[in-house]
Length: 72
Image 1 (cartoon, rainbow, N blue to C red):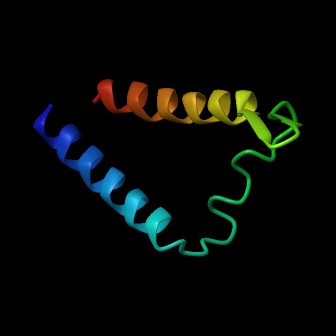
Image 2: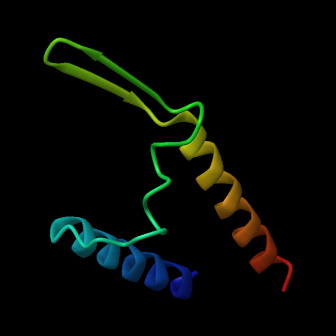
Image 3: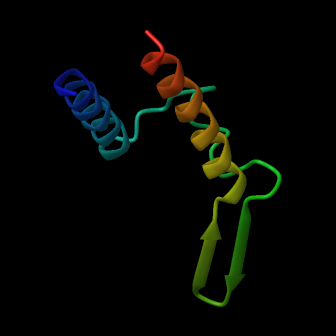
């Protein structure tokens, strides 16, 4: 469990730094929010964003990774 928390913290730290400094990561983060099924509703000055398909894809990837790691 400690190893998982350590790697999760490293992942969050790297993600936060890359978002803060707006690193251009081609082909890695460009698909997030642009999949079919992700909804963007703009009314005037208000923007509603529902990344339904991106969340489902990320959930699938994490499920595959974590279910594979528990079998060892």
